[in-house]
Amino acid sequence: MKITIGLFLLFMLPVTAHQQPRKQQSIEFTRDNPSALISTNSSQYAIFGLKLGMSPAQVGSVLSQHKMLVAERDRSSRIYVYDRGPRGTKGKVILYLIWEPDRAKLGRITVFADCSRYLKSNVARLLTSEALSDSSAFKQTFIGNADRSDITLDIASIDLKNTTYYYDKIGIEVTLVHLSGHEEHVVFALVAKDHE
Image 1 (cartoon, rainbow, N blue to C red):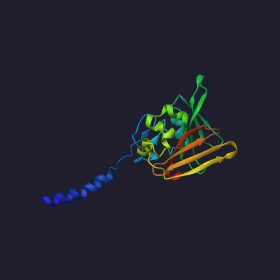
Image 2: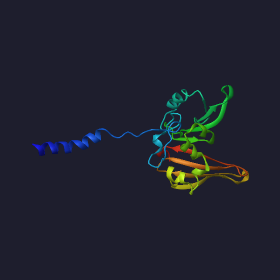
Image 3: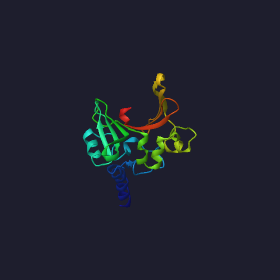
Image 4: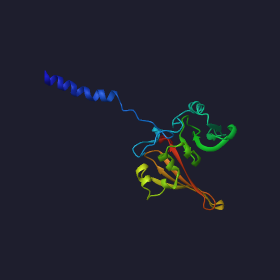
């Protein structure tokens, strides 16, 4: 009798575990301050409640809940998100939401430097040179080494150059934007795995 019960329980364990898959925990960049993103991926990330995979209607619903944000659709159905300036005017651009023409789901969220004040401290560090330096302890523990890099924009006549570092496993791209003269800043993007 004991052996029969033991065998019954042994066969029940995998079924029970299979019926209750572990839910991926969401990381809200304006609320949560993760110590690392290495063991996570972009499907878990949110900014102001915006997540990859959302439809334009879902994004519109989320944006309508944030009175400090102003959204503006461009001609290609992409959306620029600004913070609200004085007297309700459009302030600084903080996000760019991109749907590819043949896709119904949000495939990329670009996060600009002026968004840093809304992000928790470790996430905001992705918008600094610290996220690009191989000698940075923060970079090594937070996102690790890039899988690859590429010059994604190079216009020598106006001294404009973008170098992008791809973190394919976690779905993040970090870009160094070099403007004319010595001005540089960093942006990052969340990229859906099927968008690459």
